[in-house]
Length: 150
Image (tube, rainbow, N blue to C red; front, side, top):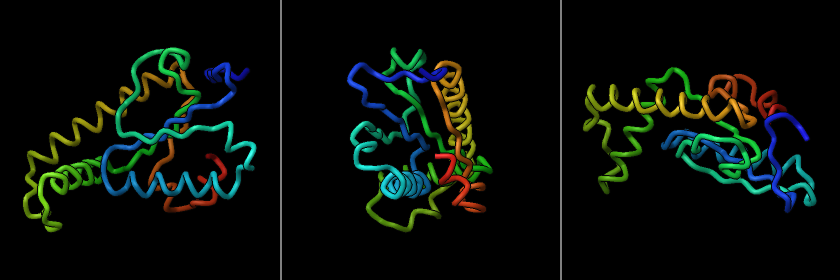
């Protein structure tokens, strides 16, 4: 039994894939799916359940929130994560795909604050749950190294 690693009695590891809302998070989810498809055996895949979400986890131990481990995407600089978040929210509100001109400085400031709070909350969960943080920059620089980490 590894430190900070909770495995339910049924033996199925519940692994949270966390990223703020936006196009970058969708690509990260596809990356994780591909890594698992390429490197996990069918028997290993049967013992893993991946839950992709942009919501931070509730505070507590793995047994409390039900996750064995967490894989989190950190998009730096934070303005990039905030911009992606604002654009995603605007895309959901408008049917038009050209929403960039609707973004205001206030939108970016508020989204940056939201992303910072999100990361702080996930970091707090990491005190009791195994968390792997994958930075977007590292993923772009050397996807093979990040693939190995996952």
